[in-house]
Image (cartoon, rainbow, N blue to C red):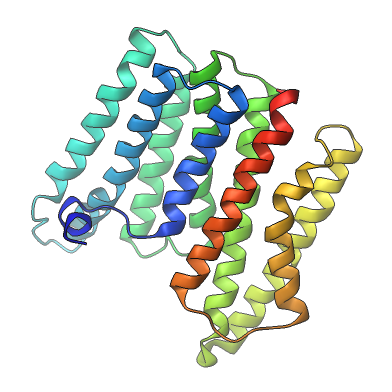
Length: 266
């Protein structure tokens, strides 16, 4: 725990899953793990860890307080990200990683600025963060295979859709334990139901049009089933730790099934 505090490592289990599941999905679908892909994982990890001290520095600056070395720590992580990322452009000539990386950094800065103002817990802020982390999927696929195409785009889309499901579900479950926010819970419940209905029908439509294999539904089955089960039989409040562990298990299932169903088609 001291290492987490000293190095300012993110403590949210779900956030780590949102980082590594898209990265691993891209590598597994590509079917290779060359040195450029490893360096991409290291670069993305450093950038991801750097968000925590960056956020602390922005909050301290906003409140006109001392940052306690957070700025230097954030810059150190970002420098590591560039050290691991630069050879992919300069040596391996994976030039499409440049716009993907710049877009990721832009979303990182936007969500960090929102968090510094206490606006990161809204659905929009969380979806922006997910969109940035999910860019790891096409980036990893490109770094591992040297190719970009519609398959890489689908990896990003499916990752965003999957983790957005977690946002709506977890928000609803957290609000269910707060008796003073009954209306907010009802709203979150409606939003969660609407999103999962849209997700299910959208996946069916895409499969029907031939854009996706119908088996991709299996990758989303745990997320769809846990939401449906809650609506049929609402449960009492769970600990955040237990919900987090469950979401990691569902994410692992999503990763495996997406890799199995997309790899032949990419």
